[in-house]
Structure formats: structure tokens, C-alpha cells
Amino acid sequence: MKKKGLWIIGAIVLIIIFWAFGAYNGMVKKQEAATTALADVQSTYQRRADLLPNLTKVVKAYAKHENSTFKEVAEARSKASQITLDAASLTPEKLKQFENAQGELSAALGKLMMISERYPDLKASENFKDLQKQVEGTENRINEARQKYNEAVQDYNVFIRRIPNVLVSGFLGFQKMTKFEAAAGADKAPVLDI
Image (tube, rainbow, N blue to C red):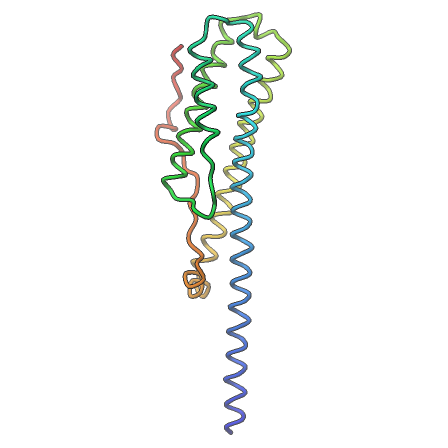
């Protein structure tokens, strides 16, 4: 009878160990998917930052006296490029700081695009048209990357918070991750006053 009891206890311990390994591996997989999605978000923002100097050069050629806007674009790009996100130490505050810098860059880009309305020759320029399409595509990619990141974070957060995984996630150091949220006032159309 004692042997049978030991076998049962041994089997239960083995089941718990295999479950814990499976839960840990699942958490690692989902956390890596979320951090990869965050890197994709940063990559798309970097693509936009890389396009801006070219777009600015084309617009400068047509609108030489719009120096304040060009300076604003350069400063916003520099500020946005200096902030990087590290998934290991990502906090809501750091994410908000990153989003604010990217919002300033978006506003500066919007002003730059508004300048094109004043210069019909610029709007007809093939270089400008090509860059404008690339910027539009990049903005769409940024939105898509942020959505994929939020989906990956949701999947990870749900996984670590569900029973029985919650029993080991905190013990093993798996913490809830932060999602991207809309910037304050994003529900209102921007007013670009140039």
C-alpha cells in the first residue's frame, strides 16, 4: 500500500513539474512574441524618421522661406530618435514619453505636408509624390505594427494571468506588459496652423 501511495505522489509531482515547465516555456514564447512586436513598432518609427530628411530636402527646394517648419521637423525627428524602448524595462511612463515624442514628430510632419498645399509645383514633383506615398505607407505600417504589438501583449498578459499559470508567473518574474494607447486628444482631428 505504501508503494502505491509513493507512486501516486511521484506521479503527481512529475505532472506538476511538467506543467510548470510547459507554463514557463509558454510564457517565454509569448513574451518573446510581444518584445519582437515592440521591436517591429520601433523599426517602423525608424523608417519614418529615415524618410523625413529626404522629404524635407524636396520641400526645402520649393519653399526656402519655411525655415521654422524645417527646424521643427529636424528637432522633432532628433527627439523621437533619441528615445528607445527596452521591453525588459518598459513602463507606462516610458511608453508615454515615446508616444509623446512620436506625436511631436507626427505634428511636424503634418506641418511639412501642409506646406505642399501652398506650392503647386511641389505637389507636381515626382520626388515629392513618391516620398509622400512612402510616408503615408509608413504611417499605415506604424499603425499596423502597434496593433500587432497590442495583440501580442494581450495574448501574453492573458496567458500569465490565467489560472493555473498565475501561480508560477509572478514567482518566475513574468510581469504584465504595457500596451500602446491613443495619445490624449487623439479623438479630435488635428488643427495644423501654419
